[in-house]
Image 1 (cartoon, rainbow, N blue to C red):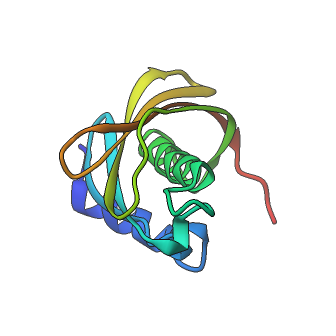
Image 2 (cartoon, rainbow, N blue to C red):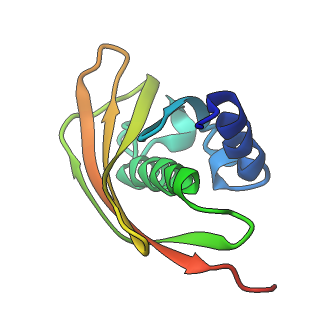
Length: 141
């Protein structure tokens, strides 16, 4: 049975000392087929014109989609790798918060496909992304 609090705590733990922590990505909701996080929009994630950088948006999308795949694997025996991501940036954002939700489209044994929507505080679509993750056997480091 899916345990939302335990899964959100795992996502938070895995984010320590990573890009997710640098971008201040905070995982805030999860269910059996989705994961949601939020990220502040400020000068730390701006491009030179003072708008949310497309690269920061894609980093948010891949972070959430990759973390979401953890709910379908055994992290002690398997790991996830993002193998393809595409993004359509539809609206700009200068400040505030964006919310990112990854929903599973295909859950195979070796490939997970996610649709990832990034919206603003008014639920207006900022970016629409698609992420493919590969599930691999965990290797010793």
